[in-house]
Length: 139
Image (cartoon, rainbow, N blue to C red; front, side, top):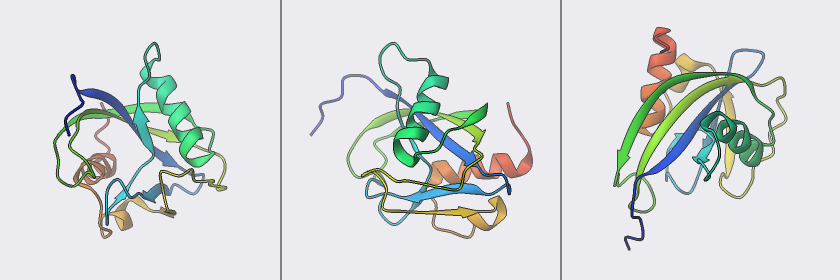
């Protein structure tokens, strides 16, 4: 069950479209919750490079104008589909496209205003970042 030796650095990608809406995904990895694209930082990869790569891999979107929002720790959260210890580096960014092409990690997506997102079933980490974005409290 536990094959992890160290915490895993990961990125969360809060993608905004030209209308100012954010991209949310439904993923089997966070059952019943909306999340954002993201994933592991690969060995030898800069965090910002991981943001761009993960957005492209999971959604087909090209992103730019990356802004660091915050980091969070996810330590064996039962909301995730298996026990893991992650360090999340959360970034907001922009895209010029609305054409989302999901890979196997997500089953559906939607574009939504930040305030409206708070009325959806979000995982706690996504909710924390959205609240910070609404407050305009960027690091």
